[in-house]
Length: 156
Image 1 (cartoon, one colour):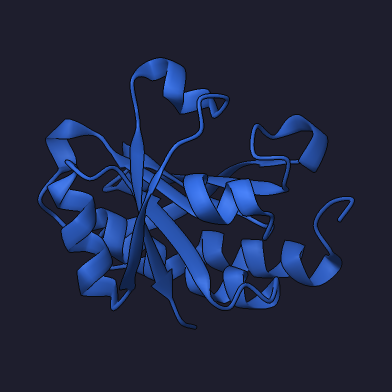
Image 2: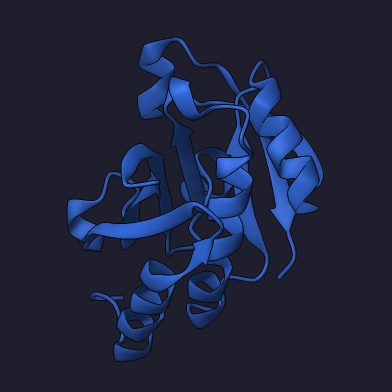
């Protein structure tokens, strides 16, 4: 893929305009495959709560092994003052229309085994646990000390 399709641009605008109560997503950037560390187009959104930055969420559009096995097609981070409000779950739900436009079904999401908050988020989303996988030494997070990922499958 050489970049977002017109339908995807429209869908990202729809996602950007989407709200869930006090949460809205603002499109921060769209990375081309060659500019993305995942070798896939990626949309990055800011999570905004009452006009304050509360975290980020990304949708990575691809299905190659390293992406779906280790990184996942969705990545989120919630800033500490905003944790406990289910923002990652809510933001992921807001991304689902964009994932569908790109034909990402199922959607693969990974997390670290010790990240209990992410595990609970994935369970609330209805994602099914598939397996734990060891990271290869050449995976970028391996140098940061990560050794394992849990893989979840979210049917759309």
